[in-house]
Length: 174
Image 1 (tube, rainbow, N blue to C red):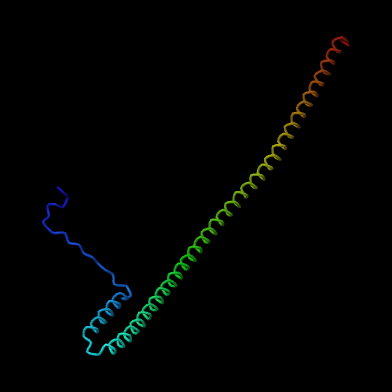
Image 2 (cartoon, rainbow, N blue to C red; image 1 turned 90 degrees about the horizontal axis):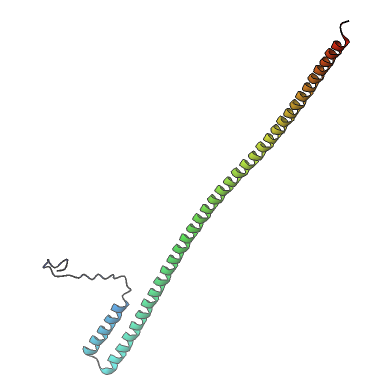
């Protein structure tokens, strides 16, 4: 059993038709019906009927040409409007893309400058640290040299004192 088999309603199909056409088909149909009716109901002679048919055919040809020209103009105008709209939208899209590209370029430039500034600041800090480290090493070397010299002076004094005491002991009491 199908999904909608429980319903007894008959299926109804609606066909919608847009009548935005030019009416050329209706015009030609009307001309054909009019010409046929004129032939059947013509009270005139064959010569007059043929002349009238020629006139009506020329009128129909003129109307058909006019209708064709109208349609051509309409199509041309529609084409031009559509082309203008597409060009306008394309220009807007180009403008938006350029704007976004400019914004991205500005952001990249800003970030690049910030990175460059950070690198420069790091270099300056490294130079300062190098100078301070060299100063600390020099001070340490000086302190070490001064300490060694002090130790030598003290050792020399101790050796002299020891030599003086040894000399005093060998010389005996005076």
